Every structure is written in C-alpha cells, then in structure tokens.
Amino acid sequence: QVQLVESGGGLMQTGGSLRLSCAASGLRFSTYTMGWFRQAPGKEREFVAAIGYGAQNTYYTNSVKGRFTISRDNAKNTVYLQMNSLKPEDSAVYSCAAKVFYEDQYKYWGQGTQVTVSS
Image 1 (tube, rainbow, N blue to C red):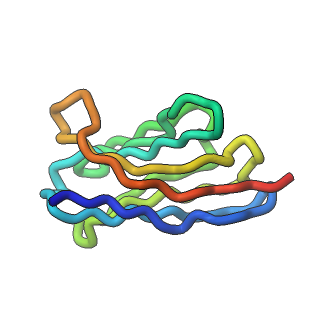
Image 2 (cartoon, helix red, strand yellow):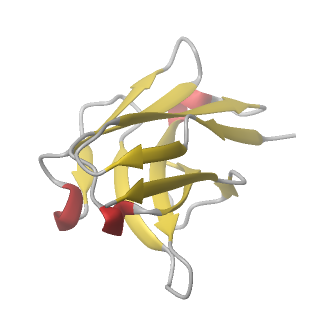
Image 3 (cartoon, rainbow, N blue to C red):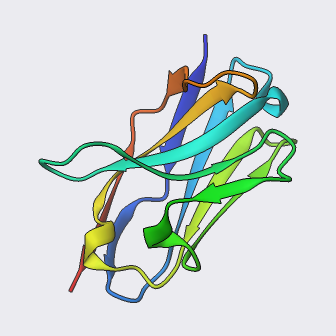
C-alpha cells in the first residue's frame, strides 16, 4: 500500500521560512516524479513544484520561483519543499504527489499539511 505522509506545516509570519517533508512508502520511490501542490480555501488545487526521479530536473510555478526549492533524498524516500520569504498568499494545504516518470497524471497523493502565513 502506497503512503505519502507530509509534515512540517504550521503558522509563520510573512518573510519566514518553513520546510515541508513528504515521506513515501510502498513504492519504488526512485522511479517516481514527485510533486507538491497546494489548495487554498475556495480555490482550485494548483501545482507548486516537481522534481524528476533522478533529481536532475525541477519545475516551479512562477509565483514561487526564487523562493521555494524542491529536493529529494532517494535513500530516505523523502521529498522536501523549502519555502522561504513566505507571503500570506502562500497559505494553503500543501500536498505531495507521486507519478511514474513516464506518465502524465499523478497517481498517489498525501493527505496534506496546512501552511498559514500571517501578515
């Protein structure tokens, strides 16, 4: 059974930093592209960042470029999202997701962790 478990969310002031972690189990982690998504109340879920299975390639939505960094440790089956210079508009539930590298759709999703940035 595949499980993705996020941690590291919380309450932070504007300009602060948080690091999210997503621990994966039940899958060959090193063959999966991992992504972070977020959903704010009343809004659609949006893509935040992704990292290829070998960590050579990373992708970010424009609003977080230069502030967020996605990374992975295949030995620990964990993907991270370092979030710096946080803004109130970054407040959302952040979820990690996994897809086989050659597929288009993310197949597995975590439950999410809440990030709240106060102004």
